[in-house]
Image (cartoon, rainbow, N blue to C red; front, side, top):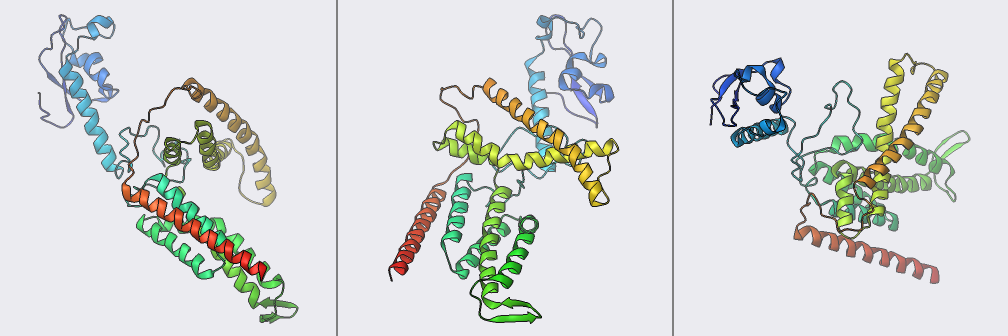
Length: 373
């Protein structure tokens, strides 16, 4: 095995016309030799001797490259992939070996990611997607079924603790603030001023009166809304949509229903990314998108046409692509990637489901008994 003695030196095997590997030469890495491993090993003029097959050699002579050179190229590609994964902060929690292609985020021509998933090395990210989905449903059902502010605040606190364990507290707070600030403000204004049956005024300014009962109900409604939104954002930030749908399909969900769920969960992020790309393209063509409200509204109209047409074309292209890959085939599917699922996660799912079901039944019985009395 030849060694790497100096920077920018790559071992290059020389192939004789008879098909036997020759002496290895070290070729200085230059702009002409950075295209690919095949270009460096077979088509570089500096790596050939007189009489060696060139780029126009037949397939029979080209296939005579030694096995050691193929193994050397594979080893070099693996080392480069490992270095790239370490530089980018590690691979995915489920050990995806294929590096992502295309421009990096922030590079020229790179589109915004179509998924809100944020990768972190945390115990929340490494959980099975089905476990996170079941816990999310339990939080939502409990928040709707309860009438206690303490339980709602406990659910919200558990979501915040999970975000801290997943190291995404900042992303969670930013997304929840953008999503719920206006709605929460409207809840407090409307309920504090116009809550029916209010008797205890808190603050009176002329004809405007803020009622205590309205503020109390607004606190409960806002806490419930924040708990549900925070749980939803936590699930999206820590779980890949395709992993969740793949796990559901492995547990018996039909392929068509899984495709519908996947497209439903990805439609808003994908349309946001497409709208941002179209807006950038319109700006590059001289469209003014900043200034007064009328100017922004005029800039909004040229955005809708390409967005709607592009979404329809994307759906048609995607449907043709999945049909070409045998989506409607009745044959048994084999999973490319197995997502780990431990025994304690299964117990956690069953325990949370049973506890939520018991709580809902208890609340239903209490409500029926109150009606009878």
